[in-house]
Length: 305
Image (cartoon, rainbow, N blue to C red):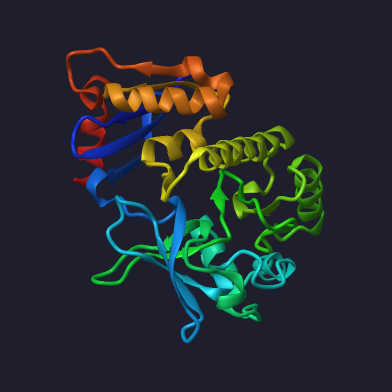
Protein backbone atom coordinates (compact mmCIF):
# COMPACT_ATOMS: atom_id res chain seq x y z
CA UNK A 1 0.00 0.00 0.00
CA UNK A 2 1.48 3.35 -1.05
CA UNK A 3 -1.38 5.52 0.16
CA UNK A 4 -0.63 7.64 3.22
CA UNK A 5 -1.47 10.85 5.07
CA UNK A 6 1.40 13.18 5.96
CA UNK A 7 0.74 15.77 8.68
CA UNK A 8 2.99 18.80 9.24
CA UNK A 9 1.88 20.51 12.47
CA UNK A 10 5.08 21.98 13.94
CA UNK A 11 4.46 25.56 12.79
CA UNK A 12 1.53 28.00 12.97
CA UNK A 13 -0.42 25.88 10.48
CA UNK A 14 -1.59 22.31 10.24
CA UNK A 15 -0.82 21.02 6.75
CA UNK A 16 -1.99 17.64 5.52
CA UNK A 17 -0.92 15.92 2.32
CA UNK A 18 -2.75 12.93 0.89
CA UNK A 19 -0.23 10.76 -0.95
CA UNK A 20 -1.51 8.10 -3.33
CA UNK A 21 0.84 5.73 -5.13
CA UNK A 22 3.75 7.95 -4.14
CA UNK A 23 2.29 11.16 -5.62
CA UNK A 24 0.57 14.13 -4.00
CA UNK A 25 -3.18 13.72 -4.53
CA UNK A 26 -4.73 16.31 -2.16
CA UNK A 27 -3.53 19.06 0.14
CA UNK A 28 -5.25 20.76 3.10
CA UNK A 29 -4.16 23.61 5.36
CA UNK A 30 -5.61 25.26 8.47
CA UNK A 31 -4.12 28.09 10.53
CA UNK A 32 -4.20 27.16 14.20
CA UNK A 33 -5.09 30.65 15.40
CA UNK A 34 -7.98 31.02 12.94
CA UNK A 35 -10.11 28.30 14.51
CA UNK A 36 -13.33 29.73 15.90
CA UNK A 37 -15.96 28.35 18.26
CA UNK A 38 -18.40 26.98 15.67
CA UNK A 39 -19.10 23.31 16.29
CA UNK A 40 -17.93 23.42 19.91
CA UNK A 41 -20.32 22.04 22.52
CA UNK A 42 -20.65 23.71 25.92
CA UNK A 43 -22.37 23.08 29.20
CA UNK A 44 -23.94 26.50 29.57
CA UNK A 45 -25.78 28.31 32.34
CA UNK A 46 -28.70 30.61 31.54
CA UNK A 47 -27.85 34.10 32.80
CA UNK A 48 -30.85 36.07 31.48
CA UNK A 49 -34.20 35.29 29.89
CA UNK A 50 -35.62 37.96 27.57
CA UNK A 51 -39.36 37.42 26.90
CA UNK A 52 -39.51 40.49 24.67
CA UNK A 53 -36.89 38.99 22.34
CA UNK A 54 -37.96 35.37 22.91
CA UNK A 55 -34.34 34.53 23.62
CA UNK A 56 -31.91 33.90 26.45
CA UNK A 57 -28.30 34.71 27.22
CA UNK A 58 -26.15 31.73 28.17
CA UNK A 59 -22.84 31.80 30.03
CA UNK A 60 -20.44 29.36 28.33
CA UNK A 61 -17.79 29.42 31.04
CA UNK A 62 -14.76 31.49 32.01
CA UNK A 63 -12.90 31.02 28.71
CA UNK A 64 -15.66 32.60 26.60
CA UNK A 65 -15.80 36.33 27.21
CA UNK A 66 -19.37 37.20 26.22
CA UNK A 67 -22.61 35.37 26.92
CA UNK A 68 -24.08 33.45 23.99
CA UNK A 69 -27.48 34.09 22.41
CA UNK A 70 -30.06 31.27 22.43
CA UNK A 71 -33.25 31.85 20.41
CA UNK A 72 -36.47 30.18 21.55
CA UNK A 73 -36.67 27.89 18.50
CA UNK A 74 -33.17 26.63 19.31
CA UNK A 75 -34.19 25.48 22.78
CA UNK A 76 -34.45 21.71 22.82
CA UNK A 77 -38.12 20.74 22.84
CA UNK A 78 -39.39 24.09 21.55
CA UNK A 79 -41.25 22.62 18.59
CA UNK A 80 -42.19 19.60 16.51
CA UNK A 81 -38.86 17.77 16.23
CA UNK A 82 -40.08 15.47 13.45
CA UNK A 83 -40.32 18.53 11.19
CA UNK A 84 -36.57 19.09 11.46
CA UNK A 85 -35.68 15.97 9.49
CA UNK A 86 -38.56 16.43 7.05
CA UNK A 87 -37.22 19.81 6.00
CA UNK A 88 -33.59 18.70 6.03
CA UNK A 89 -34.44 15.73 3.80
CA UNK A 90 -34.93 17.96 0.77
CA UNK A 91 -32.71 19.38 -1.92
CA UNK A 92 -33.15 23.13 -1.98
CA UNK A 93 -29.81 23.79 -3.66
CA UNK A 94 -28.18 24.55 -0.32
CA UNK A 95 -24.72 23.53 0.79
CA UNK A 96 -24.57 19.76 1.30
CA UNK A 97 -21.77 19.98 3.87
CA UNK A 98 -22.56 19.20 7.52
CA UNK A 99 -22.66 22.95 8.14
CA UNK A 100 -25.18 23.30 5.32
CA UNK A 101 -27.34 20.56 6.80
CA UNK A 102 -27.23 22.28 10.19
CA UNK A 103 -28.19 25.57 8.55
CA UNK A 104 -31.25 24.02 6.91
CA UNK A 105 -32.31 22.49 10.21
CA UNK A 106 -31.87 25.87 11.89
CA UNK A 107 -34.13 27.50 9.30
CA UNK A 108 -36.73 24.80 9.95
CA UNK A 109 -36.63 25.45 13.69
CA UNK A 110 -37.52 29.09 13.16
CA UNK A 111 -40.90 27.91 11.92
CA UNK A 112 -41.40 25.77 15.02
CA UNK A 113 -41.09 28.43 17.72
CA UNK A 114 -44.57 27.95 19.14
CA UNK A 115 -43.68 28.17 22.83
CA UNK A 116 -42.55 31.01 25.06
CA UNK A 117 -38.95 31.28 26.19
CA UNK A 118 -40.05 32.05 29.76
CA UNK A 119 -41.87 28.69 29.87
CA UNK A 120 -38.77 26.83 28.72
CA UNK A 121 -35.88 28.42 30.60
CA UNK A 122 -35.18 30.19 33.88
CA UNK A 123 -32.00 31.99 35.01
CA UNK A 124 -29.64 29.44 36.50
CA UNK A 125 -30.82 26.56 34.29
CA UNK A 126 -28.13 24.38 32.73
CA UNK A 127 -28.26 23.79 28.97
CA UNK A 128 -26.09 21.69 26.69
CA UNK A 129 -25.59 23.77 23.56
CA UNK A 130 -23.51 24.02 20.40
CA UNK A 131 -22.07 27.13 18.77
CA UNK A 132 -23.50 27.77 15.30
CA UNK A 133 -22.15 31.30 14.80
CA UNK A 134 -18.94 32.83 16.12
CA UNK A 135 -18.91 36.02 18.23
CA UNK A 136 -18.68 39.21 16.17
CA UNK A 137 -17.67 42.54 17.68
CA UNK A 138 -19.66 43.06 20.86
CA UNK A 139 -22.09 40.26 20.04
CA UNK A 140 -21.67 36.88 21.67
CA UNK A 141 -21.85 33.55 19.92
CA UNK A 142 -25.14 32.09 18.66
CA UNK A 143 -25.92 28.67 20.13
CA UNK A 144 -28.49 25.92 19.70
CA UNK A 145 -29.70 23.07 21.85
CA UNK A 146 -30.14 20.85 18.78
CA UNK A 147 -26.69 19.31 18.57
CA UNK A 148 -25.21 17.82 15.40
CA UNK A 149 -21.99 15.88 14.87
CA UNK A 150 -20.73 15.54 11.28
CA UNK A 151 -19.12 12.34 10.09
CA UNK A 152 -17.73 11.13 6.79
CA UNK A 153 -21.07 9.97 5.41
CA UNK A 154 -23.67 11.28 7.84
CA UNK A 155 -24.57 13.93 10.37
CA UNK A 156 -25.63 12.64 13.79
CA UNK A 157 -28.34 14.40 15.79
CA UNK A 158 -28.74 12.86 19.24
CA UNK A 159 -32.07 14.52 20.01
CA UNK A 160 -33.98 13.97 16.75
CA UNK A 161 -35.16 10.37 16.40
CA UNK A 162 -35.43 10.13 12.61
CA UNK A 163 -33.31 9.43 9.53
CA UNK A 164 -33.14 11.68 6.48
CA UNK A 165 -31.26 11.07 3.24
CA UNK A 166 -29.94 13.74 0.90
CA UNK A 167 -32.15 14.03 -2.15
CA UNK A 168 -29.08 14.79 -4.20
CA UNK A 169 -28.77 11.01 -4.20
CA UNK A 170 -30.95 10.47 -7.25
CA UNK A 171 -31.61 6.73 -7.06
CA UNK A 172 -34.65 5.82 -4.98
CA UNK A 173 -33.19 2.33 -4.53
CA UNK A 174 -29.93 3.75 -3.16
CA UNK A 175 -31.80 6.13 -0.86
CA UNK A 176 -33.83 3.23 0.54
CA UNK A 177 -30.67 1.17 1.05
CA UNK A 178 -28.99 3.96 2.98
CA UNK A 179 -32.04 4.78 5.06
CA UNK A 180 -32.67 1.13 5.94
CA UNK A 181 -29.03 0.55 6.86
CA UNK A 182 -28.81 3.59 9.13
CA UNK A 183 -32.14 2.72 10.74
CA UNK A 184 -30.77 -0.74 11.45
CA UNK A 185 -27.63 0.42 13.26
CA UNK A 186 -28.42 3.85 14.76
CA UNK A 187 -28.74 4.16 18.54
CA UNK A 188 -32.32 4.18 19.76
CA UNK A 189 -33.80 7.66 19.94
CA UNK A 190 -31.13 9.31 17.78
CA UNK A 191 -31.29 10.77 14.29
CA UNK A 192 -29.10 10.99 11.20
CA UNK A 193 -28.94 12.86 7.94
CA UNK A 194 -27.15 10.73 5.36
CA UNK A 195 -24.91 12.93 3.22
CA UNK A 196 -24.47 12.85 -0.54
CA UNK A 197 -20.97 11.42 0.00
CA UNK A 198 -22.61 8.18 1.19
CA UNK A 199 -23.89 7.33 -2.29
CA UNK A 200 -22.46 3.92 -3.27
CA UNK A 201 -20.54 3.67 0.02
CA UNK A 202 -20.18 0.13 1.29
CA UNK A 203 -22.41 -1.14 4.07
CA UNK A 204 -19.48 -1.53 6.45
CA UNK A 205 -18.20 1.97 5.71
CA UNK A 206 -21.57 3.45 6.62
CA UNK A 207 -21.84 1.27 9.73
CA UNK A 208 -18.38 2.45 10.79
CA UNK A 209 -19.43 6.07 10.35
CA UNK A 210 -22.56 5.61 12.45
CA UNK A 211 -20.58 3.74 15.10
CA UNK A 212 -17.91 6.46 15.19
CA UNK A 213 -20.49 9.20 15.75
CA UNK A 214 -22.35 7.16 18.37
CA UNK A 215 -19.10 6.61 20.29
CA UNK A 216 -18.25 10.29 20.03
CA UNK A 217 -21.64 11.30 21.38
CA UNK A 218 -21.35 8.81 24.23
CA UNK A 219 -18.04 10.39 25.27
CA UNK A 220 -19.53 13.90 25.06
CA UNK A 221 -22.54 12.87 27.13
CA UNK A 222 -20.38 11.27 29.82
CA UNK A 223 -18.11 14.30 29.96
CA UNK A 224 -20.91 16.81 30.43
CA UNK A 225 -22.49 14.72 33.18
CA UNK A 226 -19.25 14.92 35.17
CA UNK A 227 -19.05 18.72 34.92
CA UNK A 228 -20.30 20.92 37.74
CA UNK A 229 -20.20 24.35 36.10
CA UNK A 230 -20.34 26.03 32.72
CA UNK A 231 -17.54 25.26 30.28
CA UNK A 232 -16.34 23.51 27.15
CA UNK A 233 -17.48 19.91 26.78
CA UNK A 234 -16.26 19.18 23.26
CA UNK A 235 -14.07 21.13 20.84
CA UNK A 236 -14.82 20.60 17.17
CA UNK A 237 -12.18 18.51 15.41
CA UNK A 238 -9.16 20.27 13.97
CA UNK A 239 -7.86 19.53 10.48
CA UNK A 240 -5.69 16.54 11.34
CA UNK A 241 -8.52 14.77 13.18
CA UNK A 242 -11.06 15.58 10.47
CA UNK A 243 -8.76 14.16 7.82
CA UNK A 244 -8.28 10.94 9.80
CA UNK A 245 -12.05 10.71 10.29
CA UNK A 246 -12.87 11.37 6.63
CA UNK A 247 -9.94 9.96 4.64
CA UNK A 248 -8.57 7.03 6.64
CA UNK A 249 -9.33 3.90 4.63
CA UNK A 250 -8.36 0.26 4.57
CA UNK A 251 -5.79 1.02 1.86
CA UNK A 252 -4.17 3.83 3.90
CA UNK A 253 -0.87 2.35 5.04
CA UNK A 254 0.01 5.00 7.62
CA UNK A 255 -0.51 8.50 8.98
CA UNK A 256 2.84 10.18 9.67
CA UNK A 257 2.89 13.22 11.99
CA UNK A 258 5.85 15.44 12.87
CA UNK A 259 4.53 17.11 16.04
CA UNK A 260 4.53 15.28 19.39
CA UNK A 261 1.33 16.83 20.76
CA UNK A 262 -0.54 16.36 17.50
CA UNK A 263 0.64 12.77 17.19
CA UNK A 264 -0.56 12.06 20.73
CA UNK A 265 -3.98 13.62 20.05
CA UNK A 266 -4.47 11.75 16.78
CA UNK A 267 -3.41 8.45 18.30
CA UNK A 268 -5.74 8.83 21.28
CA UNK A 269 -8.57 9.86 18.97
CA UNK A 270 -7.95 6.81 16.78
CA UNK A 271 -7.76 4.48 19.78
CA UNK A 272 -11.13 5.73 20.98
CA UNK A 273 -13.07 5.92 17.73
CA UNK A 274 -11.20 4.05 14.97
CA UNK A 275 -9.28 1.43 16.95
CA UNK A 276 -8.39 -0.85 14.05
CA UNK A 277 -6.28 1.97 12.57
CA UNK A 278 -4.37 2.86 15.75
CA UNK A 279 -1.13 1.12 14.81
CA UNK A 280 -1.00 3.06 11.55
CA UNK A 281 -0.51 6.39 13.37
CA UNK A 282 3.25 7.01 13.23
CA UNK A 283 5.51 9.69 14.72
CA UNK A 284 7.97 11.16 12.21
CA UNK A 285 11.50 11.01 13.63
CA UNK A 286 13.55 12.21 10.66
CA UNK A 287 15.86 15.24 10.72
CA UNK A 288 14.66 16.77 7.47
CA UNK A 289 11.31 18.63 7.43
CA UNK A 290 8.59 16.04 6.92
CA UNK A 291 7.30 17.57 3.67
CA UNK A 292 10.83 17.55 2.24
CA UNK A 293 11.40 13.95 3.28
CA UNK A 294 8.28 12.79 1.45
CA UNK A 295 8.91 15.09 -1.56
CA UNK A 296 5.74 17.06 -0.92
CA UNK A 297 7.23 20.58 -0.91
CA UNK A 298 8.51 20.26 -4.51
CA UNK A 299 5.11 18.96 -5.59
CA UNK A 300 3.39 21.93 -3.94
CA UNK A 301 5.74 24.41 -5.61
CA UNK A 302 5.13 22.78 -8.95
CA UNK A 303 1.36 22.89 -8.43
CA UNK A 304 1.35 26.68 -7.95
CA UNK A 305 4.04 27.49 -10.51
